[in-house]
Amino acid sequence: MANDLNRICLIGRLGKDAELADTKAGKQYMKFTMATNRMKGREETTEWHNITVWNEKLVEHLHPYLTKGKQIYLEGLLTSWKKDENSIIPFIEVNYGHNIQLLGSKNDEPVTPKQSGKDTSVFGSEPVREPLSDDEGGVPF
Image 1 (cartoon, one colour):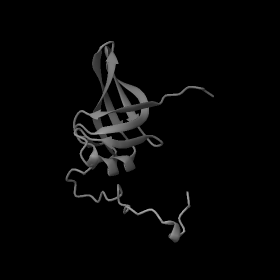
Image 2 (cartoon, helix red, strand yellow):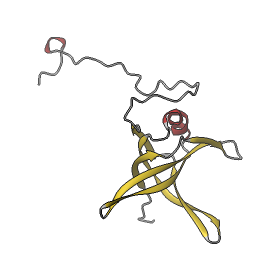
Image 3 (cartoon, rainbow, N blue to C red):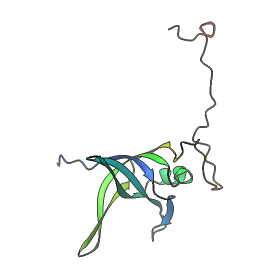
Image 4 (cartoon, helix red, strand yellow):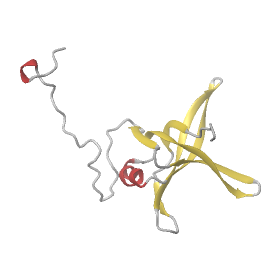
């Protein structure tokens, strides 16, 4: 039994709209690039990450919202793909048990899905409720 851990957590912004693709077996997945910034001395540097999302529920529900400039929190695992003998491309996989959360947009606009024709009402579908007053059995503190 190994005591190893391969988990990466990032907060960053999408470099372009997320793209849908299909495997040869017909399974749909999503891919996009994500930028993270950090200070290196007195200079800010940007790291680019290639992301592949295999979790069908995340693909189905989040694709309309993952647009260029959108800020997200992502949990996944770091892996790599050997393109040829001299080139290894690192990327991050988001599988089952991993997570993506929408945080903000490029201009911190309200979250609105791009035109997809799909029902995306699962996000923010709860009505806003006023807190109960003491008369209505609310917690008195």
